[in-house]
Length: 320
Image (tube, rainbow, N blue to C red; front, side, top):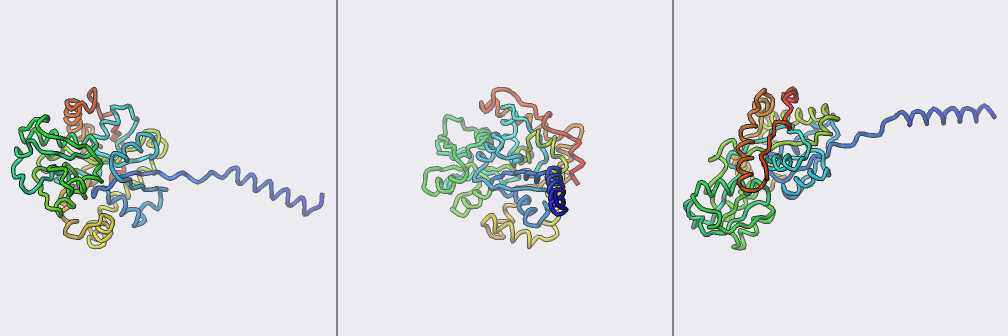
């Protein structure tokens, strides 16, 4: 064997050893969400480059029920879902952890009605469109309770939120239980708010969920995602015009509508998250227990669900 051939053999062996020792690129953490203003800081964080230390891929799906199903069947690692959807997943034995509270609804979830409907009691005998997720039935239950109207006195049409605007505009619904940005679109179409989540404070939460297996294997990356969220909230405070320009373009609304939308939600700061998830007695448990009772009464679940096992207070070290 010549000297040059020997060199090639040695080089080949070294290269094979190098490739054998090199780990393949880490798969991205797949985050799925649906259109909702409270989720916008995730997209803004991506656009600002705040995920630079974490391999993240964001997927915006058409509706929250599709997001929920993608999480349920493990097509995604992380998902933005509501507290009621979380309880339904836990009831179905999905092993998950609640990473963060993203926002608290403060008017963003609303009951929109035609101009001739003036009082809550006027919904009796009316056609009601609700979003086809547990939140839709929850808001319907709270609405009927406040209005003193029985379920059998209304006609209910469950559907994806993406279909609600057209359903209302074509005269097929008198009442629409929905959330932003559909709420703003219905306001533009002449509907008005008769009941919303500001009248039932601290009952509707949007959360960031992760499969337990991913939580156990990739905690540091998940902590980086939490850090990017809080960093983005600070950016939104200090650079309001730029943040508003980016978010309004994504949502397809103007600045005035954007301001109204933000008034309907409370974006969750590190302190809110520490209170809700990071204390020895997590503040999220009481509203979760109350919501689970309503879901049981509405036959959305067959037994009460305890969310305590989905909360790891030690993750609060990432809330900064």
